Image 1 (cartoon, helix red, strand yellow):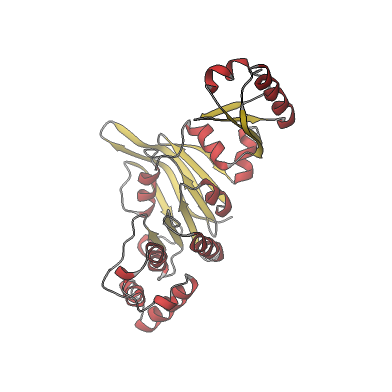
Image 2: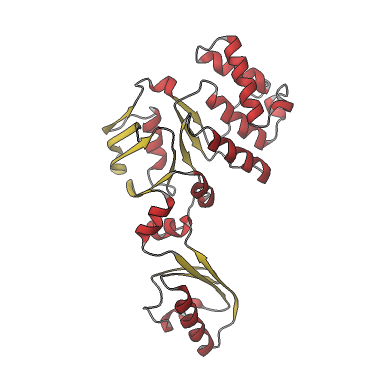
Length: 304
């Protein structure tokens, strides 16, 4: 696969704090690259260096075309629109800022607004749009100049279910024309959309690969989840055979065990529960999710 963006030994410090610690990775042309990490992981700093908004203290970022300003589009997490311009006006205006002709800009604007479900409100002022419509308008603004690389920061934040499906399908539809770097806190969405995923924490890359590869590297594929009344840490955990489970996560009255043999693990856990007279309100067997891996690697839930 052709590399469109290469980060080589990127470093960034803020005083004595190392925000990004000598990381390297390639992003391939036409892929959706999920770039994930908790707050303070170094993700935002890395993205700013990739976009050219922040100068690295060490290392480099190279883009295949060489012209970064026209090669990338950025859709920030915070909605940025001109409130007193209509949808069509501001997308056309953004096109002219990229030296597009008025006719090309108008034609592309109409195409984008139709694809993103905004044709019926194209003449409505942005301040009168719903939050979800403004989010979709932001995506149109980032795409007007047909960038080679599109950075999408939480593109589905604040969207209703129908809009989420529309945006997800649209992102998939342009992946062969535009390389997409996606950040999201929704691990399920990241798994559905991303061709490859890079997880970063403490300024270092923890793992990179597609969802199946990441799960294989993790060493387990199944999870046994139990909802139990009472003190799980004291009444259940000390009595479980460590051979049954690999890793464990406790959240309130729910405990999730990562296992290799779910049937044997569930049977052994139920034996302990029965002998301890514990009350279970729910038991589930499921496949490992990307969020399970994320928590396993970072040691905490997503906080952004």
